[in-house]
Length: 612
Image (cartoon, rainbow, N blue to C red):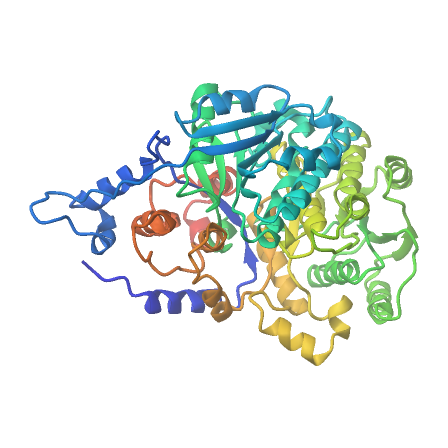
């Protein structure tokens, strides 16, 4: 058996990460058996893996050797604790069926809250107030659809659910250990297939904020594991899907270790990956020869950077005849951004591309419609780069700060979506919404994390229906905006972080790589490999394991220390090896968005395409 040489593997990973700027995510198949009454489902799988002589998991043998005279390894048995469970339930009955499918004997006390539309924050606090606390709180309100698929109803339901989840997290923080675990369930938020998105409609996005909020809550409520589960929107076999969801909730050795999807095809876990394999789609960004490109947040640093990049492409390909409209509520250019705007004006004049700063109010549907009245049918592209920060730790953040962020980010994007549905712009071919790496969790940004994860959800929905939309999850720009005025000490701190600031050139390179994939969303950021390697060493708590698992396809982890409960899942994952290298591992994102393009191109171009 070849020993696992972590230093060698980590060294190769460091070299691979250096300079790469684009990082999609992938849902990778990882089917596990249904949880059992005695909690030994994964243990039985491990016994099989270790005892199979031809298994690649021989890596696991050194943990526990069979006792003398024993033919095969047997995992140590354990006592399963019955749990007290508080459920904020949906109104369509899914959570009731999921709990009925739970392994026998795993619930001691159960309390169901099913009137969540009527709750206030003090009601949430009252439900949490139990003498011995709660072992598990399940938030399943994200399962419910809105009353209709209108933007107004989607925003209303999204606000109700997001606000309740915020209240719940804030009140849990106040209990100081009164809640042991949190499980968050949504329905179809990550669905990327055309059939589901067409049948469900825009309402499938209503729980879109919960994913990002939970990722930041995992950081701020650092002692509490958070398990996120997205369930198939239209299950083919309800009982089978609900049994798998119940297993995910009550399988103690995997709880909180992954973001999970339960689909009709099985169980999937979320992994961050390099864009290299996805660039095989070779999608091109066409510079239009006529029409209007609009950029919201057009007086901000990032909007101006995008305008300059479009001019770069126009100059490179010798294209003119279109115009760029930079939109904002004030039309004021700050002193910091004035030089870049002046540069854009000069270049645009030389290239024959009209540019101007215009007023636009994106805070209402009427404001967006008013702009489209003026530009339709000539609009060819829209870049939504506007946004407002209202950062605050969970302890101090208010719902008003959520509203401010939501208005400028995903609600404005929904208004644009609605207008695009109603106004004819026959040559419209790109709609970018600027998301953020905060969707993966960022201290003090629970509102921003939530709003940006909704943008990602909207991009998946639109692209799945054949309508243009791309969400770019930006990391930290270093040449523009607030970063340009940072002190040397602050800049040094960021340089030594796992995701340091990047230059404009690096950010735009990441953008171009991402656009070539044709994916609905991707991250653009710069890894600090050695710092990242150091950060994923911890493995004693599920939240530490979550970070290791999410980046495991990029940042290799040390082997599990033992087959004790905290390390059992790590040993299982390490025994299987990188999922991206398993030939029978279904990868949903690649299969849905990249593989059809690659196969079509190969069919049309044959060897010429493969050589190119």
